[in-house]
Every structure is written in C-alpha cells, then in structure tokens.
Image 1: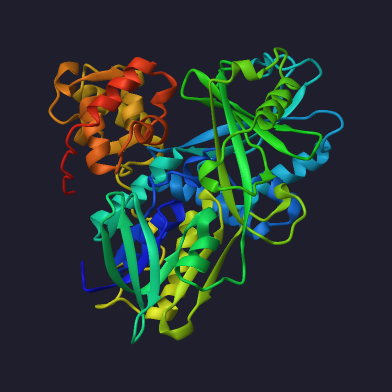
Image 2: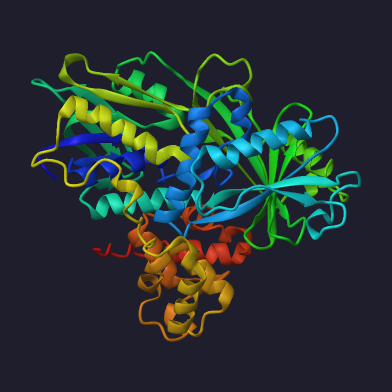
Length: 509
C-alpha cells in the first residue's frame, strides 16, 4: 500500500465495491473498509432482480428506467453465472390498472432500453394454460415480459474480488472511526478492526458509500453534514414452500398501489416481496415485522387458490433501502435514482452516495469516477482502462457467453463426474468458470472433505473463507449461498465448529 492512497471508501455494499473496482481498474489506488460483512446489509436484502422497474414508468422516471433496462443485459454479459433471464407474468384483474395501460407500459418497457437477447412481451392465457394453474378463478389474461435475476451478495463479492486482484485493499469487519483533514490536503483516516487494533491511512479523497449509514458517516466521521439526506425505507421478504411448479415469476398488483413479486427460489421455495415503508430505527436491527409478513401473505393469498399463511413462512429477511429523500410523501413513491454529493472544502474532498438500486450500481460507479477525476485528475501514469471498461470486462468466473451456461455446466460435469446435474448447476451459478478452483483436483466427494449438508463441503467453505471474506456460518449459509434453508440445526452447528479452525490462506489470482 502506498504512503497515501487516492481513495478511501467507507462501505462495502454494492456501491462501494463497484466504485472500488472501477477506480482501481482505471489506475487509482484504493482502500475500502466495511464495518461488517461485504454486502451484509442492504445489498443482500434485495428482491434479487435486475430490472428496469415497470412501476417507475408511472412516476415518469424514464431516464432511470432506460438506464436500468440497458444494464440488465450488460450485467448478464459480464456475469452470466450469477445473472440469468426470468420471465414475469403480470395478471390483469378488474379494479387494478387497466389492460390498455399495462400494454402501453410493457411496449415502452420492451423498446426503451435497447433489448437484444431478452425476449419481448407476449399475452398469456391464464384460464387454460399451465401458467395459470393454482391461480384463483377469474384471472384469465396475463402479460409476460422479461427481466433478470441476480445473486445479489455474490455480485458484491465478485466486484470486491476483482478490485483486489487489480490492486485494491479491502478490509472487512473494520470500522472507520475518524477522518480528519490532513495539512496540505487529503485525509487522515483512522480504522479499527474487530480485535481493537487501530491503523491510520492517508488518502487524497474520501468516498462515503455508507448506504443507510451515509448521513452518520458524513456528520460524525467526516464532519461534513451533507445537503441531502438518506430516507430509510424498509423492504421485507418472506420465503415459503414453492407455490407452483413452473419457472415463471408473478408480479401482482395490490389495491394500495404496491406491487409484489412471487419468484421461484432455490428449487424448493417461493420468494415473496417486497414491502415498502419508512423505517426510523437502527438499520443494523431491521427485521420483517409480523404486520409485513401478514401483508405479504394476504396479498399472495388474494391471487392463489390456496392461501399463504404466516405458518408457511420458512425464512424472512429485511433490509433498509437508503433512498435519496426527494420529499415524496409515500415511501413507495420515493425515487430509486441515485444522487452523488461532492464536497471539496479545505482541499479534502468527500463524495457522498445517496440512493441507487442494484441494477444501476455500475453506472453509479461511472458517475462517481467522473467526480473523482474532477478532483484528483488522472491517476499517476494515466488511466489504465477507459471509462466504461466495467461493462466489457467479465467479473470473476463470468468469462463465457450469456447463452453458454448449459454448455459450461456440461463441461463441469465432464470434468467432475461425481457431481450431479443440480450440484454442477449450483457450483456454476456461484463460481462460474472458477468452480474448478473450488473443486481443484477432486476425483470423488471424499476429496472435498467434511460434508455439512446441502452439498456444502470443507473444500467450498475454505474457499469462501480464504477468497470471499466469509467469517461466520451466516455469511456462508445466507449470503454467499442460501444453503441455510436446507441445513438442519445439527449441520449448522457442525459448520460453526469447523469455522473455529485456522483461517485458510488467500490464494493469488
């Protein structure tokens, strides 16, 4: 690490890690610190969708929708292992948005964002076709369109891995406790790790990517109160045993103007979400409330013949969206666009990030780099990679074509004959072409070490600990993977005991 780095980034969610990747690729020196697990808060609590946001058209956010629609296929192209296309079915029901308005919105959705690989909108017969089986009587017509799914925490991790392999430094479970302007310009930043050890790092510029904590970072750490502020909006999700057998997602309209998705999830389950309500509390303590669980169950039950009840819920998760406060009276109407606020006082610049959505994180990072360059100029020796490079260079493991997933899986099966098709699919979904780094020279399951259930073995756990900053069983079971849904308490306890052992060494790329 140089005596003074160009950028010190506070916050290891998708925005912080996306900025770190883009910046180090262009030649800036970067240190990022995250107080908890990478992507451990908002970025792991999304609905896992890369989408333009159909309902944002009603709020006339055409620029945001267009940018997001374009990004779907960009991200699919650089990460075809963790991104995949999904078809969404929007049933038409009386009393909701009229059919002509839905057709108009979907026409705009199909043509606004330069769609190339994703199929367009079509009509669906819900009365006699297989897609409508299980829906309540009276739903006869639907419209089917395309968006994409993403493994959200893995998107964060892959950006961080790529940033480190290009020269950045990433510190997890490390809190920034103080940032003071440095005589002559820049910052002296004090950080403290989980053991209590402190370190001072000097940086030319501070990036506040604290997400729900962005206001606190600006006020109490940098002591630069921002002009804007974060509006904390809670979004909760529930997971239930799967409600239907096909692979479509439903997007349901509710009488209060909200929409809710039901999404096939991890093979055996259905994900239902999300809620939208202001959250005044500590973001670290957010949890799905009984009222939100009941709301999601009631809404889903209004569309299916068999009711969904809170007793069916096997898992919940909740996050705080750090939206930019645009003065909207209702949480669901608050903008999902991002705002970057640059403060250049005292030759100690700080850039604060407000709002945004996971779909447009890469474009947010590009906008941040424009402001960084305006303060710092070109990196020493000139830019290594041009603006826009992050949409062209694959994320780790994503170096195959978007439509080549099945061929890649077949190749993995040929190399590791002891894997079943479902297991090979999971490995490829998590690690892409780097699955072979995880599996190594294994020729049988026994070569992968202790088995913890769900296909998880010591070999994979060691990889997540050494290469992906996993420090706890929760990091592995509910963020790097969702295997916590299928492991028994005894299997979780065995994993926790195993992780008390020495930390495996990180391997170079």
